[in-house]
Length: 263
Ligand code: NAD
Image 1: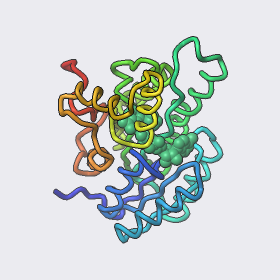
Image 2: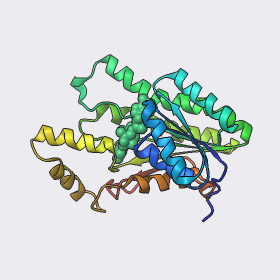
Image 3: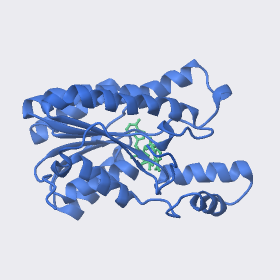
Image 4: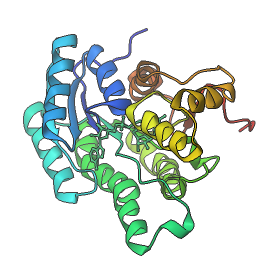
């Protein structure tokens, strides 16, 4: 299948590892010019080098703090200077901290709002002029199955990701006449460092091993296992690509069948 990604300029946020890295890798494999961004300088430069070596395509490394508006603008400027525009955007950031209602004060809510929801608004706002100039584009947000089925002890994530999911749907309607598609992926349990640390935290809280926690969660997933970064990356790259040109406004769960509702 021809994905039509060759030569496309893609900005992928929070991509020195994990889900963002997985999408960046598939885009780069398909010939896109990828601009990755993440907070830790050494990690993001290492990741860019790894990707460029593996795919033979140019990868631009950027220090990016998704919660900082100036950092988002600088990422856009650097990408545009290096690659001459932007066709594709992946909205992603680190997850907000775990906890319940009584654990959080106004400051915690505000920080989660900036990190998860405002970062999405700002990234999309920043790339739209370039996409409009190019006559179209494709945006993919990453949220979580928690947007559909709230997860215990992840209250900040549950609330903020519902906002991002809704933003993606609303914008897909508004931007479709301009040939700009907006879709959203909801990961369930993809085997990344973030999930490993959540498993360790739960194991500690329950006084059992991390392996036992993982096995218990896997037994509830119809496909019987966590997803891989590679599987997630392929789906992300497909939705961003021209091969998915007639898909917009969709939220897709990548969860091994965990969500039991019909819609
Ligand atoms: P991860 O910890 O493996 O990777 C996170 C990446 O984000 C790293 O590259 C890190 O440097 C970068 N990052 C963190 N904070 C950042 C910031 N403020 N600005 C820019 N970059 C930043 O995590 P992951 O599993 O890939 O998760 C990515 C997102 O998806 C998170 O928000 C996570 O909560 C969410 N999520 C993941 C899963 C899953 O199954 N892995 C499930 C539900 C939701």
